[in-house]
Image 1 (cartoon, helix red, strand yellow):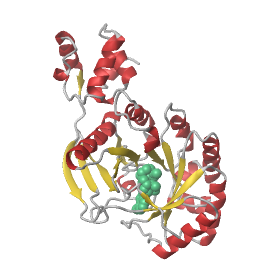
Image 2 (cartoon, rainbow, N blue to C red):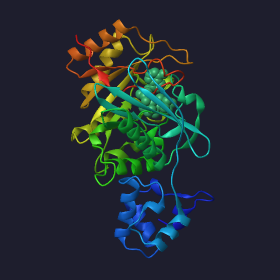
Image 3 (cartoon, rainbow, N blue to C red):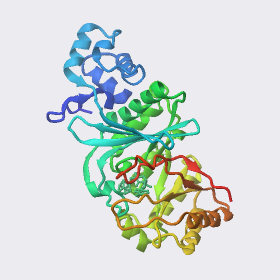
Image 4 (cartoon, rainbow, N blue to C red):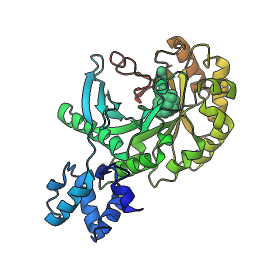
Length: 360
Ligand code: SAH
Ligand code: SF4
């Protein structure tokens, strides 16, 4: 890595909190400093939560001064915070340094706190049922911007609840596998016991199915749980509602998921949005069972959150029948509870990952 690239990309400053330990060691090496200095810097930034170089008192003053001229910290400005009166779900709107905004949501369910975070401003995948798609892609988030969302929500939990943030889902705005370099750095820092120390099993990355990028996650030392937005059981319907299916058709996606779940190193959840008259027939349930049979997975049925697109949600009783059919085939099938119904507004997909198994 060329350090000049790290420090300034064009006029952009170097964000210290976008770096993993290796990058910080490299940065220190360019200043003639030993690797342990990089590790100290890393500890300040990602473990002790330092927000300025000044605080790093075990670094010599001349080194701190040098660093001050070279690096900066990511700032997320909280512009709004809305808490659901129904279930305590809290939605945050953060302004980034360039004025763009992203959402993050704190989901609370029976003492379990989950941060739902964004990885891009907008998204270029064009799914027809999704509100974020309508924005197009404005830009990728940096690793620091993803980590800072988690940090802000963690702080919120500390100050306002008796519970600790334990789960993270990348189900906010954007397609994580369309921003895979920054995502990998963020994941590495979030699971590192010397940094945020989240269990990798409690981090879920949801993807629309960019098959060629899936291995970048499965090859990680601590791979997250993978959630895949399946949403249809044949290419005709899937390509209509998810244009990504034209590049990576169902068979390719299913084969990949079968391959990665074989060793059970990676857990996969199939997400299936229920769109009335589009993908919710009992024939679809049968086809979904056939697909799920080919891999080791659980299934999440997602009630459609109505937005500005033309779709209608499947009736609850029908979702239950769909679930029952699949459960009778022996699958673990959950219906996603959408928390914070009163505050979601125009947000297309910020949902509870908290799954509620509905009794038969
Ligand atoms: N881009 C990733 C992750 C973000 S979207 C992905 O598509 O998987 C998170 C989840 O919300 C996806 O399963 C997505 O299909 C779903 N979603 C999008 N719009 C929705 C809507 N209006 N109602 C219900 N779920 C929606
Ligand atoms: Fe992007 Fe996911 Fe929305 Fe599709 S559903 S447009 S991949 S955010």
